[in-house]
Image 1 (spheres, rainbow, N blue to C red):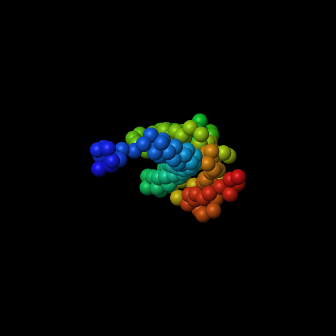
Image 2 (cartoon, rainbow, N blue to C red):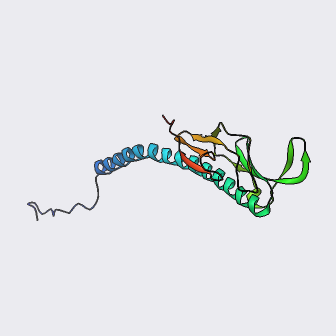
Image 3 (cartoon, rainbow, N blue to C red):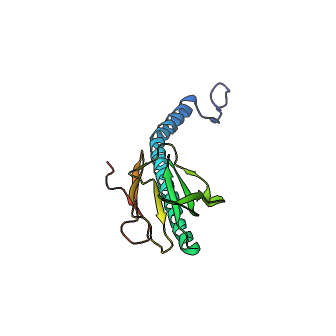
Length: 164
């Protein structure tokens, strides 16, 4: 008891200043973390787009060898699609038709991701060979190179050394 008969009560809550300080600290931490998350998200988009194209090229190669028919991965308008050579032949070569099912669906690149120096199409032949190509998948956070020139029938991916 305190003099005068008033009893001292323990503090049971936070003061307004304490709450504001915690909110300010949390806001500062969030402000620092947002750019980091957006950069890693942009890097992930580039990696996913390159992985989709590489997977499609490898799949086309295996299907070409298995079925003994030419397959093609068409890269146009910011998308990749798997095509199969039909029996019809023109002076320019075989006609290609869309593959049915999940593998034949159009794979659009995410916004902000683009192909640089990409060919219009990459052919995969029944003997396991792939057209020699070398192109980049680029985004805000850098890029990756996709190439079939280094090893016969192999699709390689590595970081683009031209990133600045």
